[in-house]
Length: 68
Picture (cartoon, one colour):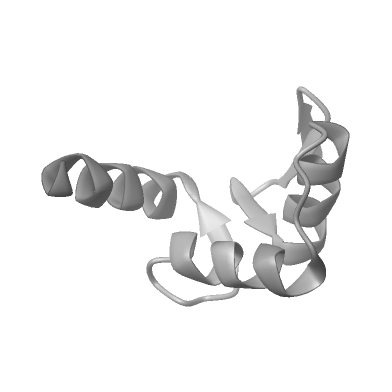
C-alpha cells in the first residue's frame, strides 16, 4: 500500500525512497541536481537504511534546532 501525501508517495512502512524524495522535490519546484538531492537524502536518512522515515526527519530537525 502506498499513501500519497501532498503528492509525496509514502510506502506502507511510512518511509520515503530516494526516487520518491526526488519526485517530491520536483513537484514542490525545489531545484536540486542529482548529487544535491542524493546528499540531502543521505543527510536526512539518519539511520542510513536507504529510506527517510518520520523518525529520521524528526532526528535531523532536532539536531538542526539544537545547533541554532
